Image (cartoon, rainbow, N blue to C red; front, side, top):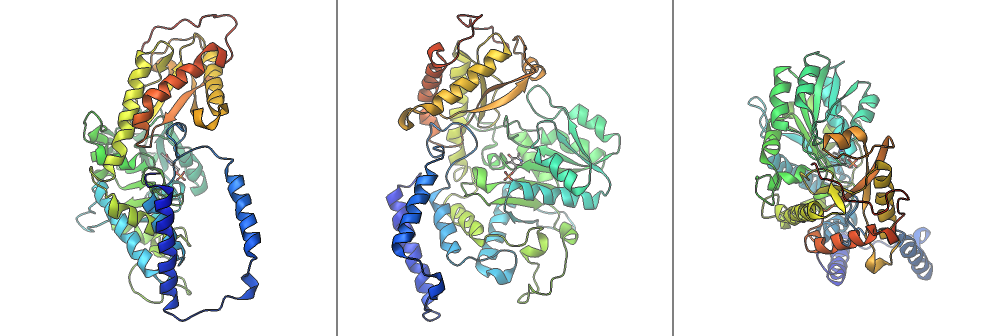
Length: 482
Ligand SMILES: *Cc1c(COP(=O)(O)O)cnc(C)c1O
């Protein structure tokens, strides 16, 4: 964690004391005996909890270079816990005005980051936090269905599986558009599909969950507009890269990110790259007028204000006000600017590029494809896909099996023959599909760790550390074609 555990502990103690002091302003409350627990039983139960939580991977450590997981920033923890002691519900203003106001504030900051300024008729934006990217995407697809009833959604073949699933839930068809050789949506194929008139909403993904591939939003928007189709951007993973979308050596490509401003809706997960604990997604619409699709009446909420409440523009009901407080406090300290949160993303991007270079220069590994964000995919140099699969799985298992202080935690990603061939990898595709290795380098601490990660991986790939193929012997390095 960026701040020491002692520092965070001290802050939390202050938080608990201060919130208790606010509560006492209302007069003392004698706790009811029904909720009393024996202090020694509490201590024993929490000790058991801590012991059970040891069954985890070290998400906080740079040698955890697997999935998109990391602990929240201390500011997010302090913000979340402070508000959680009150436990406001951001479903309605009556559930806690302060965190509802914070939610509107952080959503406005997210909208500004994406360049959402509304339409000439209805300036501004409409949006709210959600408990996840899944729900946020569901809402965007729901609004798309209300605007284009009976029409399908189109997403790239590499889009998150949630889109097909949510389309099923909404009773609409989901059509997968093929990807180009870099894992991004094939815009010509999209154009041909949209010409059929079947599609009402295109989902562009700026940062696929598997490869971190960024769909060319700037090319998708004009095609969609020509066919009168909505564009929704799933930036659940990659949305915050907007802050470093500057075409710089340690930034990411600008054009797709700048074009998000012209899309109809966007989803971003503060619980992925926004340093928040789980339970924090966001959906934002460019046109505030879409609120009409959410409207409902409830006899038991909204009695203190005539304003549009968060609960009136959200499909979810109860939501943690604490999530808004955690994000609000974090953004007060690390704002949505290139020098704020952007400076937290850049080292991970540099780490990814540095490891990609080491991999390209090595004889033992191949880069699956150049990384567009901070997700790296690579494979052991082997002659056959079955051997790549076995070596990848063995390296992952061997890394995790080492003692904690020497462990290396990687993830795998399944590829097939056509996907390998599209990227110029010529190997014998003797099995229909196989696993390669994948690392999400989303912690700034990864930058300093890269040389060590690479050395450790090479060590794990040595034949003594994994099953050796009986018939290729030396596993000769292959020519590199990407
Ligand atoms: C993570 C992710 C989702 C799903 O979001 P959750 O917060 O896990 O529900 C959707 N799309 C993309 C691109 C993602 O990376």
